[in-house]
Image (cartoon, rainbow, N blue to C red; front, side, top):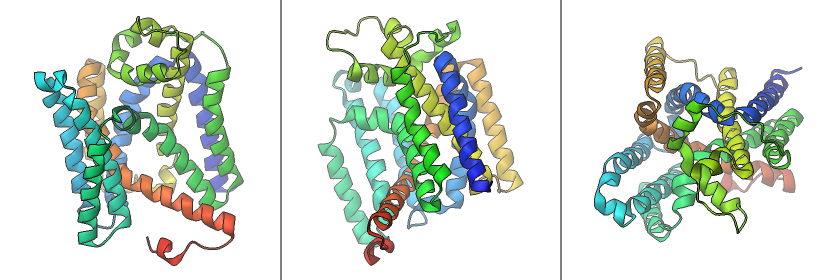
Amino acid sequence: MTALNKLNYGNIGLMGISCLIAFYLPFDLFLFVYAVLGPAHYLTEISWLHQRKYFTKGKRDFILLGILAVLIFVSTYGLRQLKAFQTHDLWASLSNSLVFIAFFSALVLVTIKDGFARFAGIVMVCIGALLARNFYVIFSIFLPTLVHVYVFTGLFVLYGAMKSKSKSGYLSFAVFLLIPVLFVVVDTSQSVVSTYAHKTYSYFQTVNLKLYDMFRSPDAKLHDLGKIIFESPLGLKIMRFIAFAYTYHYLNWFSKTTVISWHKISKLRMGIIIILWVASVGLYAWDYKIGFDWLFLLSVLHVFLEFPLNHTSFIGIWKEGWSLITGKPVPAMARNN
């Protein structure tokens, strides 16, 4: 068996393990991997992206994305506390605009090299952010969370399978798509929710409630948030999916260590990463809210800095798909991008 097949079948096994635990311990699984694997993933991926020049065409492109991440942090822990931003929902509009600008500016940074064209493109993105200010749920809630950990992870798996033309790669992608279906069709209420999870998960409940509101029956009402999230059949299905998506997202990153070689860094950088990881996990163990607040910036930063890689994968899938369907390479202009 080739190394690639071993990796793909190993990832299928990781999906199965993540799925099984998510069925019975969805809340505690999520809280554990978010606190332990999450910081390790953020720190090592940012280091790896830096080594790869963030997959953009300019040396300092990452600065723009970093500034936008800092602005998200400032708006959340500063402006959101101001009465004006709470009353007029200005914080939601600002947050939506910042994520929108980061996502589509990354596309400009990946596809355009000319300085003036880049400036014009980013100006157009900023104008688009004003027009899209009502899409708060899409950009501020789902894009940095479930879209990042599930959709983008799935596209990475698909792109890898298409590039390598690997049957085991396509199989892993099929399993990745099948597991959320299992959460829907397998009707079980045997999930265990600890007292700790009841107390702590409130920091993450926004995603659950938005998904519940999207898929609930018309006569269902949002009245008891605790029962909706922790006890309702739909609430449990949603949580299992969230727990699986985050767990496999982290495990998939670490499973590819020997392939992408994120660990081949200086001893000094590795030491700094380990110290920050230990400190982060320690904060979570001491007080989950403090740990969550401490790493909010790092989490958003890694999401924003990964946007160029996401767009690079989208372009790669399009090119591979074009060649597969037409039997010809993509046009010269597309190849040069």
